[in-house]
Length: 69
Image 1 (tube, helix red, strand yellow):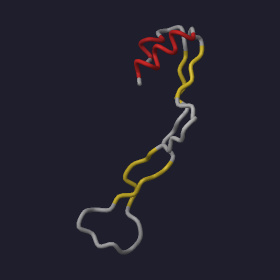
Image 2 (cartoon, helix red, strand yellow):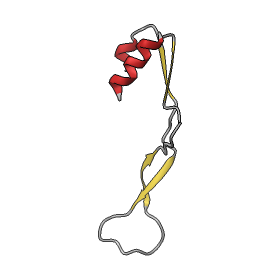
Image 3 (cartoon, helix red, strand yellow):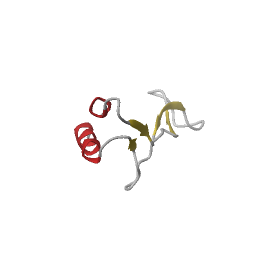
């Protein structure tokens, strides 16, 4: 996406992984609560804005997002 925008525009990523997902070691009994935080995820619901661009023509921005998708 940044290659198509070049130097003319600026891109903001509007999504952030803010939900922890816990993992437990394999072959561990199901007692004593949750495991440690394994990784973080971002919950994306329909209609949420993922990227934002400025300083770019509308057709170039659409092309950049369609290539990235």
